[in-house]
Structures are given as structure tokens and as C-alpha cells.
Image (cartoon, rainbow, N blue to C red; front, side, top):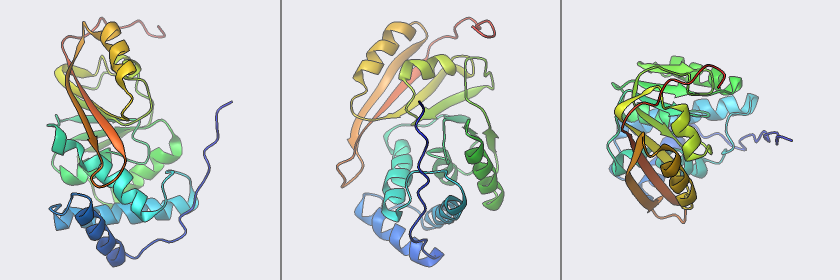
Length: 238
């Protein structure tokens, strides 16, 4: 039986200025003291939209400000400090917009596509795009599979899906020499090994970064694959 998500409501939603002050302090203590002022305030806009929407509908499991700042914002924004992102970038299984929305705030002129299969989250993402006036942000309200062929130079995901399954699902839309960025936990080695055996003809592992979210015990792995060639287009329904 599929577990039903628990709807957690925020106990407190900070005002814009208090949230901005708190985010400034958290960024300063967790390795992001150099993060630009204007972009930080855009993140605060997103925080307020996320929490006010969460009062009405369940879109995120994190509702405490500190958790959102570290486990959503910093977790997303640390990626381009470890690797070079390729655009247009597809965020597979973005949920309420992570890492896609923080990356869009950081790279406002680059095209990013958010893919999400849960309708309530899709509706939230569309509201965020409109309220924050985010341009070149496409929202795809479906799960990505190997029939999806919108051309992409980069794919990023922090969804729980297995590495090999994701490589299969994006095998037709990612261009040759494009990169797939997997935001994973520390114990991803079995997935990497299995993906290499199954998809080594089409994808090669080019980066493997072991790190922690700064000044926290949260261990992470950023695993990057490069596409070598495109598999034959699968038959529909295969």
C-alpha cells in the first residue's frame, strides 16, 4: 500500500523582513555568506509562497524555516559550486521546485524545465512562476519517461528514483554530450555500479563529489554522468 503523505502545516510563517534576516544569518553560518543580497530576497519570496500554500495544501514535508533554508535552499544552491551546469536544464521530479526554483533564481536568464507528476505541486509551481514573474521556466505536469523527447543539455534530480531508471527515462531527451546530475545520499554506490553495467554503452560517470551541507552532519553525493550516445527509440508501451 502506498503511504499517504502527512500534511504538515507551518507553526509560524515569518514576515518578509524577518525571514530575510534569518536567511542571511543561516547562510552566513553555513558557508553561503557571499550569496547575493537580491537573490537571497528572491528566495524569501519563494519561502513565503511555499509556506502560505502549505497552509492550504500539502506540497512539502519541510515546514520549519531552518530546514527549508538548509535542506531545500542550500542543498539546491551548493550544486553549481561543485560542478558546471548545462542549460537548458530539466529538473526531474522537482516536487515543490527543488532544486529547480533556487537554480532559476540563481540563473534567471537560463532555461529550466520543471517536471512533476503530482497535480497539486504542478499547480503550486505555476502559481510561483506567475507570482515571481519567472521567465524561461517551463512546467511539465507529468512523469518523465523514455517517450519524452524535449531536447535538453542537462538533467538534474534529487528524487528517490534509482540512477539506472532515471538514465532510461531521460535517454531520449538528453542530447549527446549532455550531463545528468544526481543529488544523492552517501550510499549511492550500488546504484552507480548497476547503472554502469546496464547503461555504460550510453552514459559514462564523469564526476563523483562527496560532501556535506556546510556545518551540518548531512552527507551528500553529487554524481554526474555524461551521455555518450542515444539508445534506439523504444516502442511505445515497451
